Length: 201
Image (cartoon, rainbow, N blue to C red; front, side, top):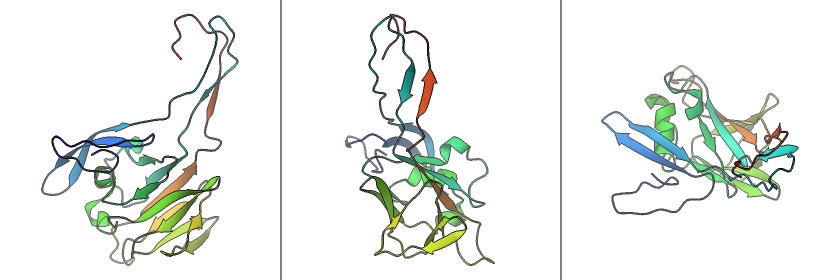
């Protein structure tokens, strides 16, 4: 699967920064992701050999989405629960990330995730969420929950939790929410002293 599109033998696909290539395995119960390769932004850094380098700035993706809740598979490691966004945004759903979602979410809870559940797209210097599913979902911020509608975009802030409906409490397979983290302020600055001739930039 390339950038959310499942390819057959001989087919090609296009990728952008933040997209991933997933190698999937289908069985009778679920689709498993055997390997996931992620295209991260390239570090842009210029330096002259022998010139002291005071700060090295590593680029970060525009935002990340982290799966959480009791409906996740216990065997799914933390680093496979995070989806990296791209500048143009992302649409989350079983149609776009089948391997990623089925690998992280229990089979019972996955049934509550639509083929296209919601989309996040840029607006000025921030990102906004638009619900695409008939299943209810909420944005939780500071203890307050806002019900998302399919015709109203909701501005996102760092730490917002997108809460997905997983059935009535007495029958629910568990909770499922997705934490939004903006790329602003996520860059890491590393202090260095010198740059040798064999440093590759």
